[in-house]
Length: 346
Image (tube, rainbow, N blue to C red; front, side, top):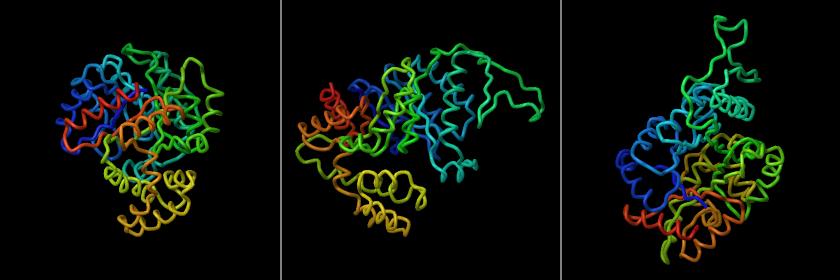
């Protein structure tokens, strides 16, 4: 099982990247860099590539709407080049609040667009002269559009690899099915190993039935807060505001993917109450209603034996990469947590 973590640079980006060297030595395998409506992820990942040696680097995630498919392919090839083949292209649809509210682009056909983006990227990396006629993307631009001067081109540089690994962030049934069919990896959020088969099993099976064997086994990337000790239960409370934000505030009623997931986990009543309170501006009250079981089952917080058992539950449910958030009062404590979870996951 690989050990990953999401980059958190609330204390300063350069300082956080400097600390990555310690995590790398402690056994961290991969770091994920987010891009919402913050600084772009690509410039940050390039900086990380220059400051690390072994660590895999992944976008977590680049939205499919804010760049053309060919730019995504060029960016991935460039990142793979500067990192000496250590890059993974994490893709996702994001949500209408960010895509329409920040980028001014219609949030349409996320499934169809994701499929076409993946197909175009893989053509580019093979240095084929790019011709693609899809429902959402046509390259070169179709006759009668633009100047008429477009012609099939291939990327000038020779990519380090002709297949950069792709991870798709998805939680909806059809999105998960698409991920299992097309991508090297799948990254869900709010992963509960005991409920994973009930919620996603059918979608994963349907996607894998159409999966190209050359893709290999699907890398399942689960996220979990991490604290190991006999008196660490208080760390669980840190997960409440974030869970409430996603379940309650990431979308309108009927258009919140995370609220839908909580309902599919069996928390229908709590999901409705959390959303109502959050949308009314009562964030603390919403956070208080996040089920304790949800926080516990999604985390790696507890004694060493408990954490070992939770890792085993993840492994048995299909997880191959656990993306941890080490919780400690000092940098040294967090580095030690990476060392311990690396040992427990081996």
